[in-house]
Image (cartoon, rainbow, N blue to C red; front, top):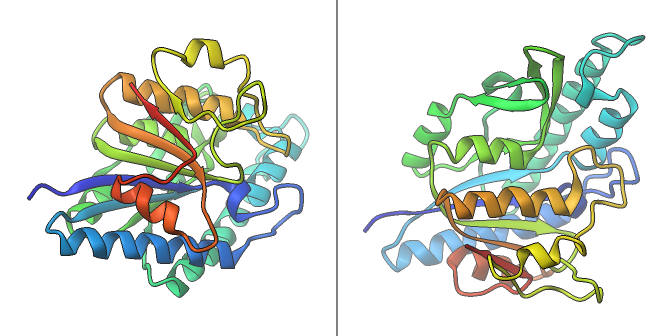
Length: 269
């Protein structure tokens, strides 16, 4: 039976306190990893293997430094390339801690460095070498990408969000399901309540209610995430997308990966 391609992002606001530098929550990551392991094993028992790609945000590691060095704009007028070094060092430390927490949850992913595989021009990701990611998926392994600083042919370097990298990855890999884990239970509307479903019928009316992030976030916050996800759905590069907060027992994340529910906000074209 044809495998199910699933992309899951553990957002920076979920795995860190974005207002406190270097504040990784290993327990949350391990709990999410256990839920992902359960989903993979359950689907395999049903004869429908899941090919899982995993992403994580930069949280209080990359975003705080990116803002300090105005890294989206590239080489700093006074500090030069120093921001590139500091953000790369920070994200490397974060990713190693992230992988260790995943292992405690029974998941053993392999990072494919965005810095080594992605390029940008004038702030926009315009290339991603996906061969390693595709090979890992085909072998039943879990590749990891994450928000990072990458080289930019005009600015020197810039910031690539996980969503921008996912957008580039989807040019080669179609995902049946995308699951974004946030610190909020989905996308909030004007009344502060979770919007159950976002589709062609209501997305334009809802954009005025969807806000960015209250913590340091150089990649646009929730509204930008919704825009990018909906574009992937509309272009046929993904089947559905769901934004949710992972419960302590991880059951809703497991169900979202399996496609049997999960709560939060469901996006569909």
